[in-house]
Image (tube, rainbow, N blue to C red; front, side, top):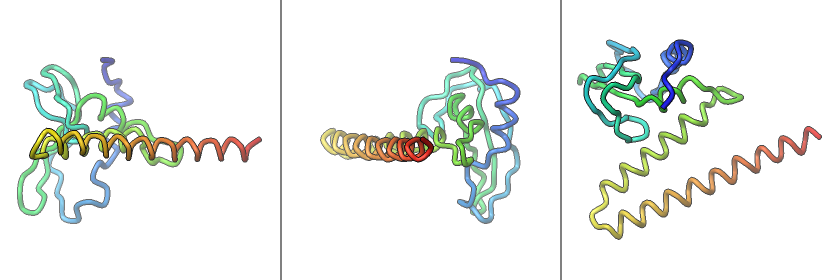
Length: 142
């Protein structure tokens, strides 16, 4: 995996991953670190390997101390805004993580499979909508 550049790190720290989610959050620490042990990524729910770099944020939310950790890929997606600063890569990574968390909570293998299929269909439909928007934009520009 390619290491984060200094520019990517700075841009990622300028991105608010919880924009509008928490009214009373007090950020205590927000920095790019090298992980000394393995953790789970808050966005994509993937495993963060020991020795990799990523973003870590410590905050007080609803009177409780919380730490959020993001893997290298999700941190890189924070540094890559779309055309309208909508961060499409970041949003897709979070959707993948949400599907993983839903499947992990499933009671039986059958419900886990059904959850995974539903998520895949939803992602496929969203991808088709994105491409239709691109085609419209290109068609209108011709």
